[in-house]
Length: 157
Image 1 (tube, rainbow, N blue to C red):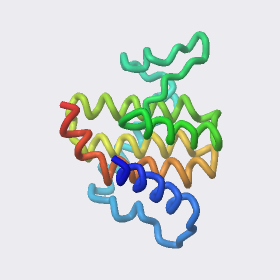
Image 2: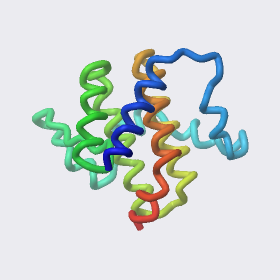
Image 3: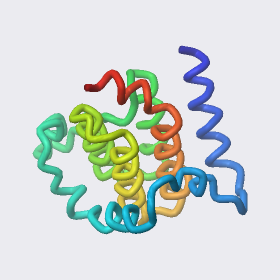
């Protein structure tokens, strides 16, 4: 468990602090360009805001309470939420909705690569308006599910 926590913290620090001309996301382009274009074109801010899934019921829209769903346990949820609260609180609902949709996709076993592609496209759209959020957290959250999501996907179904 501590190794996993250390990897999350180190990965977040590495992704957020080191500027590199190399884009690590290029390593994850395992699907065709047309498929990726289709995935990205289907994700809009309106789609994220108007999520019609039942898990979104955890987010009480009337009183502003958000049940944070980005992470696999209390600690990872706490770490991810604190990063978003500190640097991009206005995007919290959008980012959380991406996580809820990703969890639903895993639960429905729609294909890990497909779910991760949709999640990354969702984060890309949700964080575009904030450069810090987009570069640091959108990309690092995406990389985390791509690198460590296999166990969660296998146990979800």
